[in-house]
Image 1 (cartoon, helix red, strand yellow):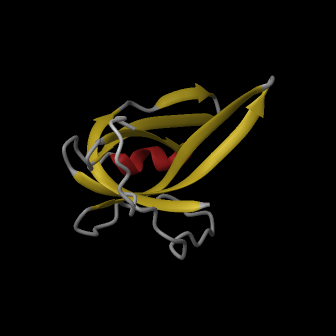
Image 2 (cartoon, one colour):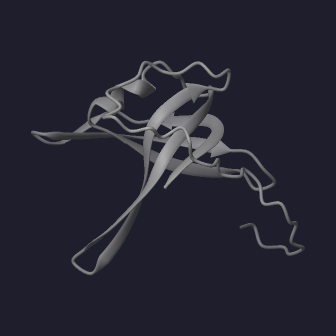
Image 3 (tube, rainbow, N blue to C red):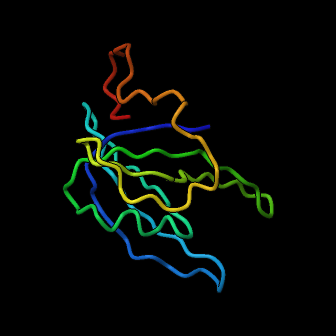
Length: 122
């Protein structure tokens, strides 16, 4: 599954070398709304560098996949980013796209369309 979401780059973390052959980099964007959300994404391998041209406070659009796995009876979910653009539509220098065509997928809605009257903050 592929999605897109736009928000403000809230936090950039350093690239972490997890093993000799694997590296990852996390970043957080703030998605505006009645209850703004801080959402953490992960870049892996040669895609870690596509975040370098963006600064905290920039409005960006992130294209990502949902990834899930089970390990020793525990379940993990990850938002795997594969493209980052400026809000103006300028794409960050592309890392190897590995032949994927990911631009033909629907966009994720930023806000729910129906309003619910409750006092819960989520």
